[in-house]
Image (cartoon, rainbow, N blue to C red; front, side, top):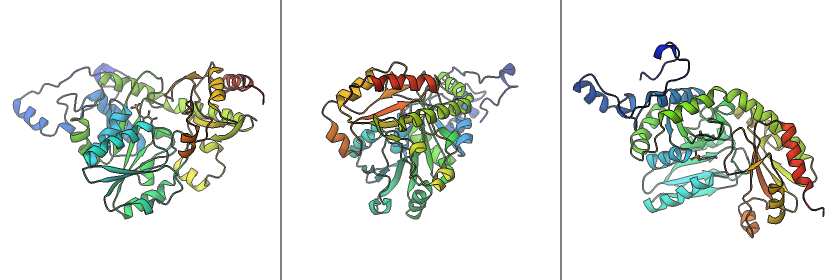
Length: 380
Ligand SMILES: *Cc1c(COP(=O)(O)O)cnc(C)c1O
């Protein structure tokens, strides 16, 4: 489509130029009419396509092994576009595994438009039993981002294919570097680029990758009409993040392994949740699906009352308290609130669950900080 094609173009720029323009003028009215009729493949207006954004889309599509990609103003923008773009009134969606909270809130919202859903939070359940005649989409996360449980994608996509159901996977946890769900038969992959792909906690963005036909369908409905479009400036920041993704992910992984080993042997820790710590995981699934593990993990604090969770979190200083993950800085959060222990249990989460995003400060400093917080807990 004439996106920026690399060094040599644009006066030899080595970094992708930021095409800070809302529209692209055409040499003749004929050209304008022709290109506007196929806006997904021509630069007409930046609510449709833009060369900087298109360059990022090409890179993401190549990384995931898809045919095409579309970038959005946020991960939720991408997820909204997929769900509203592909579903219609009367359809049913099956969500499998622990799903990102706002995605399920969106699914609740879609009930008003006659779209139903079921959530199978336990990845061990038999999916086939929950498939209905009107099931149009199976939407999964693997690993989920609270308990980091892994799905057997090849079995899941085989079942979906057998029933003629499309599959979507949120691959934010792994990034396209460590897991390529399309190679396991997933139809569409979504990302929050806000996390590891951007990688510096300074940009919000999202993406969808899949077949050219599906991406074109999403372009004309969920992208252009809902309007959560990515700007050229955001695309250039995410491209910068992408350039260091391999070195950052290796380092997140290295730090996370050391933190996990430390947590797993700590007397105040009941369980650590991360594929690296899950010794029951099938080696064949791991080797088929992953080439590495990211640095988002959680653990269950022993005797996990709200008071102890608060004490632990407030005693950390390197790990900052915050909602996101995937950036330089280590972060900590917990779903615990005063009096919600029973509710957490009914959602399959242990009271005392603490989630860590292991950043890039180095494992030694991270472990030192965690030990300081463990030491602050009153001895039983
Ligand atoms: C953050 C996140 C999203 C949403 O992304 P935004 O960029 O915040 O809109 C979706 N899925 C997962 C797993 C996330 O962590």
